[in-house]
Length: 182
Ligand SMILES: [Zn+2]
Ligand SMILES: [Zn+2]
Image (cartoon, rainbow, N blue to C red; front, side, top):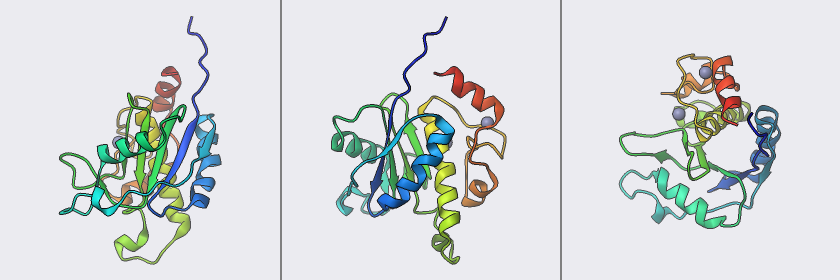
């Protein structure tokens, strides 16, 4: 019989200009979906020299390492919300990702903003897109893989339009996997 685990806390970290208020609005929406406690940490600033000087993007593992060293005594999972652009090896850009073993995840709002696509700013849309990509990254942090259901939060977004088409929740199959991982 599986012993019931105490669910870990998630620390939300605003990075490089993402507002604390934005993260405070995300927290209850994430708590509702993960049944975990989400707390907003003090903001973190990554200097421009920590970005790739040619690509002007932050490398995923650099962000993870900076987060882990900036919050050495945190308990549970770290979820960064980064205003800057993000990439990882063999990807032109990513909306976010997680390291299951290091208990750290990050989502970039850079390409989720309408302004990036030459459209008028839309805070509600930005919030919903960020929420979906946070659910996605937290799914990876719990070991979930990508899902072929285009409406599921674990569907891999190739563009912001994929993000708009998916929901802020997992499909039944992913939800079952998530519960089984606990
Ligand atoms: Zn993914
Ligand atoms: Zn799914």
